[in-house]
Image (cartoon, rainbow, N blue to C red):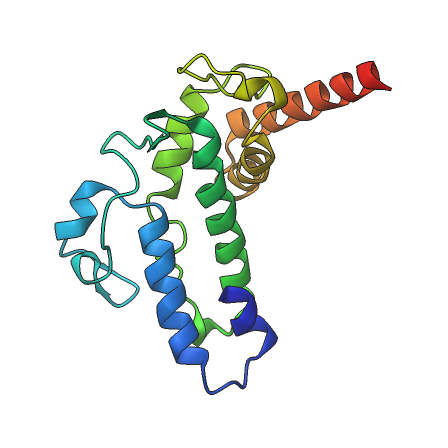
Length: 173
């Protein structure tokens, strides 16, 4: 939706796209407290926009019946993209309070579940970390956190994950 807003600035559907982009974004990284919150984000109270919590109160997400760090990278990456696209719109069409709502809190939690080399800790003991599922999205989020928030840990994690990826590629020829 943000891409459509940028690509078609004169479209009669701009306001519909904007409203839907806000709703989708606020529901992408939302906590249980957001469902009943009177806090105004994107021009309306959260309780009028958020339909259900995708994250636990502690900023983690359950998927497939367990804590799954790989799936947390997706909304972080897409919300970073949405924020950057929002910054390209005319100031009157922007929603600076929307796209990073809960973002840093969730990102900081995800960092706690990340090894020093940038790979995720998979609590379920599965093999998903072997091929780095979700790390490609985390890489985008880490670069964004480093640039936007000045997060030194994020910069280090992105650098180490890239170094590990290069190492693995070197092993396989």
